[in-house]
View 1 (tube, one colour):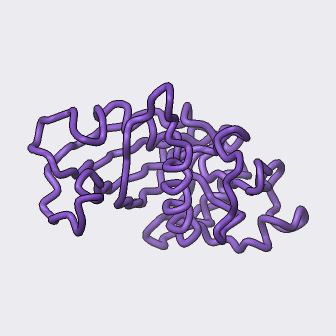
View 2 (cartoon, one colour; view 1 turned 180 degrees about the vertical axis):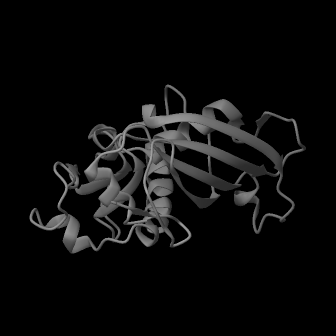
Length: 207
C-alpha cells in the first residue's frame, strides 16, 4: 500500500481530507494597501521571510528544483518571474488546498480593527498576496538579495479555502518608534488533499 509521511514522521495511507500541519511566523511591518501604494515591496519582504521557513520545511534541495530531470513531478518546476524563480507548495494540479488559522498580534487594544497600520481586512489581503506567487508587475525592479529562488505557500490565493483570525495585543514593547505598528503573526497552515493521486502521495512524503 502506498503511504505518505505525516508531520510526525509516521507512515499512513493517504486519503482525501488528510492534512499536513505546520506553523509560519512573521514579525515586522504589515500595512494596508491602497490605490496609490500596493505595498509590493513590503509584500516581497514578507514573501522572502516566509520562503526561508518553507525551505526548511520542504525536504528538497535547490538543485533538484532547478534540474528538469530531478523532481519526478510533471509541471513542478519553478516559475520564472522578473529576476526571480518561484516554487509553490500548494498547487491546483496536485489537488491541494489549505486553511489558515492566524494569531494576529499588534500594539493595540483587543477589538480595535483599525490601527496605525490600516484596517485589519486590508492588512490580511496584503499578507495573502505575499503567500502566493506574484505577478511580473509585483516584482518589477526588485533584485534578489540574495535569494533568487523563493518558495511560496500557494500558487494562487484561491487555494486558501478557509481562514480564521484571532487578533490580540502584542505586549512586547517596540524597540523604536518606527516599529510601533509592527505585527507578530503566528500562522497555522493546514494543507489538505482533495483528490488522492500517485503524484500527491509522493509529494506529501517531502514534508
